[in-house]
Image 1 (tube, helix red, strand yellow):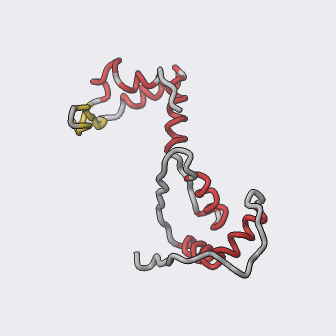
Image 2: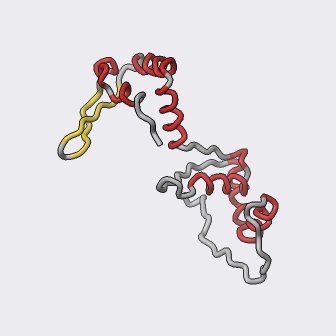
Image 3: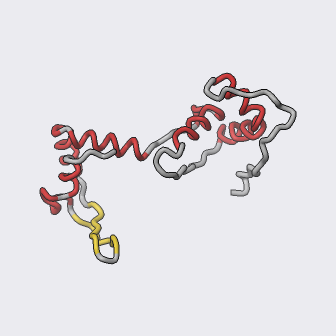
Amino acid sequence: MSSFNFPIFKTKNVSVSKGFNLADPVERREYFDLKAGEEIKKIRDFLKDKTFVAYLLGKKNSGKGTYTKLFMEAVGSENISHVSVGDIIRAANQDLLDSDKKDAITDFLSKLPWIYAFRKSDRGDSFKGYKNFDSYGDNSCFNKMGNQQIK
């Protein structure tokens, strides 16, 4: 990681007294150029021929997606992908509510050679081993999920 050296820096610029409307993309760009223009340029240059993976973790509605979109806007979206696990889970849940899609998902999963099996115990969740999908039967969590709405 020694080649990835972006020091922590302060962004306060006492010579700038102008206020910015951060809802306006033009003013937002001007704001970030004044606050962190050189650092943004370093990140853009880094992304021309290198990659990295960043994980933003936080509770629901804490701004992870917003920060990602602002970062993409600042350094260029052509080098960044944003994957929201929450969006994936909500989409999968919607698919499980549709009986045709649920059948297709179940068919696909049934062709997998194994899945991880966990059991709930008084001591918490514990790894049980590998288990064939067919062995779960109609009472599996996969069948029960289709009857619930994830929010």
